[in-house]
Length: 424
Image 1 (cartoon, rainbow, N blue to C red):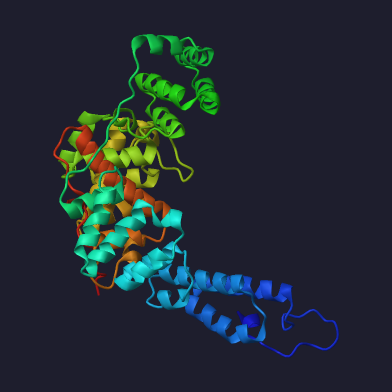
Image 2: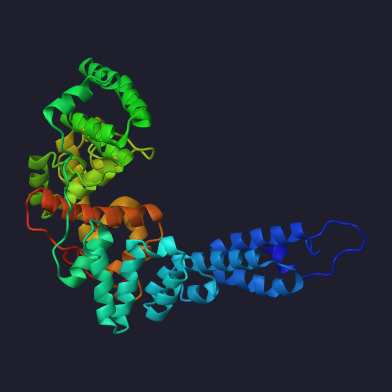
């Protein structure tokens, strides 16, 4: 920053290298420095840009890059200046989010219209286009857009269905195969090897065999393989295989109802609903009992050892060994109790509790708005990509697990109360 403050300046005499000279390399270095500064102080970075730009022959792409970075980092910090920093730069999702945070609905529409065609047609931005139409009083247009996406099965489609007061469309299409087709498929040498490895408890070899199969099998073969791995109780592999096959509609395989008894006990003990717990476990581990993350989180609900110990002590049932977290019932007990703590700590709001479960409770305090904010806007503005995707997935998975458990589906609008402001 001290170097940027010294510019513009009179270039030195002779051939001495200096950023004061308007050269391509100087301009590239200055743009890099200004965009790095934008991470800490977007407005200050833009002020530096405005001061230097008359003295350097920056091109249009450099101008757009600086404004995009300044606007994005300002939006991530939820600053009112974000829209002004973006200026006329378009095709930027964070510009839409900045307008949403301010509930500036004309700006929301302008930012959506500036997205490229493929991006603009995603359910996410079509939902927000409909929301902006409704907020601007164009209800018939809003209803028509909601109707176009409400028949699908994702977070934004479910919210659109809520706006239309329509039931969710789960679009369950199981994988159908007759006995003869499956018997013939089991004769495939790759499948025979897999089943033999599983029979001999050679887990590593079996996983390698599945990986090899996913590289060579057709989508139709992968669907049959998913049926086999599901029968083997290898659920995370089933989910991954169907992802590779791009077959999303076999809900019985992609969203199996597992550990139902301990999930229901934990739900009752913590005054939670079991579909939410199943959704957390599905998103966290895809039901791998022994999995451990790079950060050290363990088991079905990915409980950190220190968290597990603290929660167990609060329950007067201390961990004797950290490996207890690999035991499904123990993991569910402690993970659900921790989720309850997050709910109590965060306005009794499931979306805040879900975000806290993923990103940590102290970050949520920093992400709260200055005034009451609709839940959908708050979720869209979660600054961590992983946590934003996580919350959307868990909320939609909870509805799917209501369906899978043959329960009355709790609409997302009931799971997503408005977010209250920071406490003074």
